[in-house]
Image 1 (cartoon, rainbow, N blue to C red):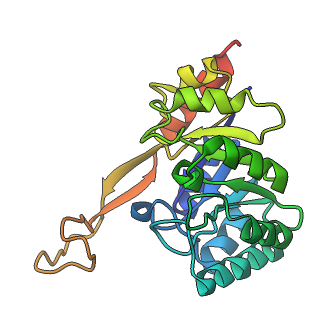
Image 2 (cartoon, helix red, strand yellow):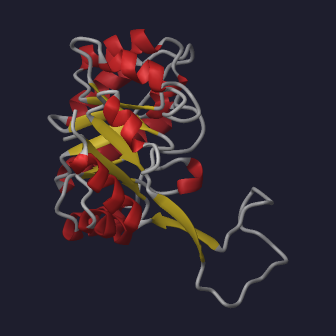
Length: 247
């Protein structure tokens, strides 16, 4: 059966995802940034409460994946903490100025991870040459690549996902970005072995008092009284679809 990874932005969400059948958790902070490194407190908490594999993201900021020296140093420190806490894997990615996999820095990451399963995240979708990048990541020993096929959604990028998935000796190709119960079957039919979904939904904050006259966000349109969380029913439905699928 295909493996179902759920992206979670809180410990309670990870518990829900586990209860509903998720096989693995990608653990992040900051959903509006696309996922940043969780705090030390959150990392310690999820280790205590979740028993399925949890792979935290190591990403110091939003935006591109070409990092300053101080940002990269922080990433290595974060990886050391993940090893000390006993996480079995992590999710990260570094590119150079030309949109290629930054091999020297990724080699440092692989050395720092020391046996942890490393997933190269959707920095892959921002690289200049996906086939070249796939070969480079295979050379590094990266276990899997999370990708939307270099498109806005994995559904739109399915052709490249299928192509990469057929490459001999390539890392596992995990389809992610817009994967939902409604379109999951097409990825299974394409032979994708791992799928990634946030299975998410926005819900209203429980706050009754709201100061509408100011914002804590640099985005003036941001709704600071909305929260993103896992939809347990969607996780359960995807797990059911995977279980019923016959190759």
